[in-house]
Each structure stands twice: as C-alpha cells, then as structure tokens.
Amino acid sequence: MGLDMRPLGKPKPGFETRFKEIMQIVQGKEKQELTFFDKLKGKKILSKEELLEEWFANQVQSYVTIKAPRVGYDQIANDWIKERYNESDKLLSEEDFLNEYNGFYVIELSQEPDAVPIYRAMGQDENVFRGQFLADCLDLIGEDLVYEAWETKFAEDALDYGNRLMDIASKIAKENNLEHLKDEKYPPENADQNSMESKLHIIFSLAKWLIYYGRNGHGYEADF
Image (cartoon, rainbow, N blue to C red; front, side, top):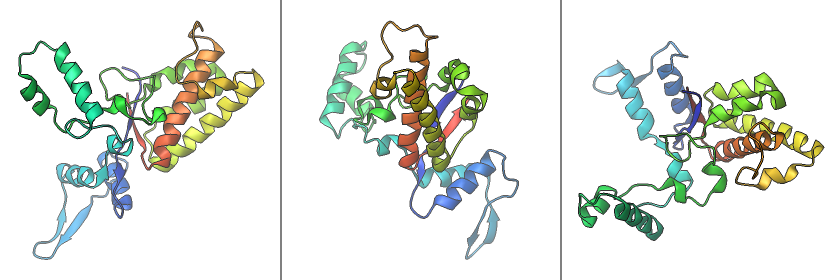
C-alpha cells in the first residue's frame, strides 16, 4: 500500500489539549480513559465512539483552512461541478446532480499551492501527500529523515519536520546549483526519476506541504 500523509483537522480554540489526549488514546498510545463530569450523572467513562464524536465535533478540517471553493457557494466550484455533470452518464438531472454535491469542498481548486501537492495519493483527497515517494530519497537524506514520515505528527512536530527537510534539501540544492527546484511546482521535465533533480523536488514539495499545514495548526496522519 505504501505511505499516505493525510492532513489532520486542527483543534478549535480551547480544545488543544483535549484534541491530543483523545487522539493518543484512540491510537493506543495512552492507557488511561478520558471522562467528563455530568452534574446529574457524575463521572462517566467515554467509549471510543463517543471520544471520536467529540474529537471530530471540535476541529476545523483542512479543506476549510485552505479555503477550498464550495459547490453551491462559490462560482468556480459551481462551474467545476457542472463540468463533472457534462462528463457523467447523466442518469440524474443536472439539478439533482448539483443538489447531491451541494456543500462539497473542491480541494483541487484551492489557491494555496503548497497545500495541494503534485505527489498525490490515489483514491484519497487531493491534499493527501503520497509520502511513499520519499522512500526514493534515502540516498540523499538518509534513513532517519525518510522514515520519520511514517510517524503521525501533531502540527508543531509536522512543522519541525518540514523545516528540517527544507534545510537539508536547500543545502543539497545549493551545493549542486539546483536551488530553482524549490520554487517549481511541477517535477523537472525530462529528468530520470532516480536523478537528484527528481528526488530534490519530492523533498522540497513535502517540506513545503508540511510547513504550510504545520504553520496553520494541522498535523498529519501517517496511513500505511
């Protein structure tokens, strides 16, 4: 299957500590259970389902942070969904088709370039980074930095990881006159996938992705 790096939602103000506690318990990293105090019923141990319900209810999703246009709210998203309808088998009327997607966030139309990667995961949201590409970069940055991507991280750790990847990629690029790769969205044309150019572009892309989400309060889930 390989590694996919999925942006986590970020906790709403005041929910930061609880957000981390719930996630660590659900992942099995913490043994203690979370409770809440009800004035009538007293202390109650929450089930995993109740914890997840609370967790999702108190976070902001990444597609909101990246200001993804929304069907039924933004013209660019309305135009996009109409194009999808024209390409469909038209089993539904256009009105019913548009109603079905009303409120849908079109991630790929976000104007935040670092948030929507070129190295995408198949079958996932468009802002999920296909981290498996980083495995091709072992010879450039070493096992520790590569395999760290397989660790789910909260925002501050994602930002730190992104900065470290950026530092080493910038150093290698400067030594090899490849600094232009940092600002290029698409992979270098006609470059072999095993070339330094291709590998540096992957590292720069992931570093920028991590830095964007980390700075904006989002960590990521390592899915493999």
